[in-house]
Length: 167
Image (cartoon, rainbow, N blue to C red):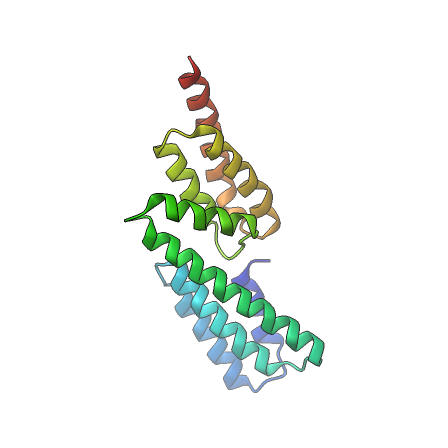
């Protein structure tokens, strides 16, 4: 189940008044029209916060959810910083993306994808292959399966390029 499906299901099964459920459905429709991953994720985090308010959680559950949300916001900020840094300091962007990958960033496939692209441009095929393999492993477990075919294609090309450039 993807994040949109999760929110749709949560909105329809919540004990909240029907007007709130309708509002959730409208928010989900608006989110699906966004262009940027960052805009979508920011909207999802806000929607998650509102959904959080509708359900009754134990103090432990509430604390755990708040910690996860704080971590997600930090990761999202780092991802956004890496995107901006790519334009002026590629090595700095690589460090941030690598950090996100090491932290099993799961909000989007962006760090894996951007690192693969950067490493391809730099002809660092071993690094590109390492990131793609890590991305394939992690993304399938993080419900970001839609990126899987693109990553498989990219992996095959990277392996061919590595072999071609060894000679």
